[in-house]
Image (cartoon, rainbow, N blue to C red; front, side, top):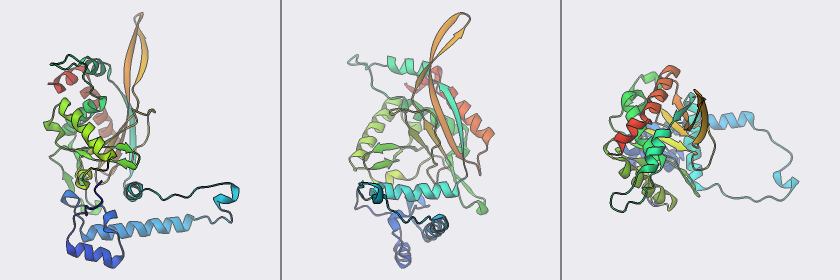
Length: 303
């Protein structure tokens, strides 16, 4: 990430942050392109104060230290993880999370994906399942616009429905987790999405990604597929209102009418903001997503 990039903010907002002793680079902007305003700084100070009070009440002072029991090593927490910690704490403490778990049968999608070949060379195309999942998620968001929204403080009673489809992708790097956005997914085909996923991930790992690319998302996908695991509870990437966690593909055997069949299943973990999304809507969202990951949809995506 470019260390010299500054968060977008007016001189007045920067002065206000300095007067309060706040590092404005840790403040999450609520305005367009992540622009920080005074209200964002006030909320940041309030959240930090609340978290300190909680830690103060629950703090247990031990008469021992870790080094009393053996050799230890002290290291600084990586900068990216420090920034992420503030955002994650804010999201977890302010958003009532609920997670729906489900599984999608992606057998036909996987068979189709593995059959794709380059028209010129005849070689097999290397397109990850994530490219298909990203495209299918956007199709689902179009039918459930409340998942592509953000809300003001609940007492204001306002929601912002986004007409764009910018999908956040959680990228695992040695520096920490980063969540850049793939812009206008609805306007791109599978090949374009796959290529952009690769180049964006590379930029993150090389710290060449622009800070602006971390803002302005519709919804986020976080995947454990390349590592392992099935279901989990992903934390919503504020100010979004939902996040999709996907696990590792697994094969299951079914027996019907004397015949044995092997299916490929994809674990889904959908966390959502229960203030505006209820369980029934989340279940319907998952059902639509599973339908969009089916064979017919997979063929249309590749065109």
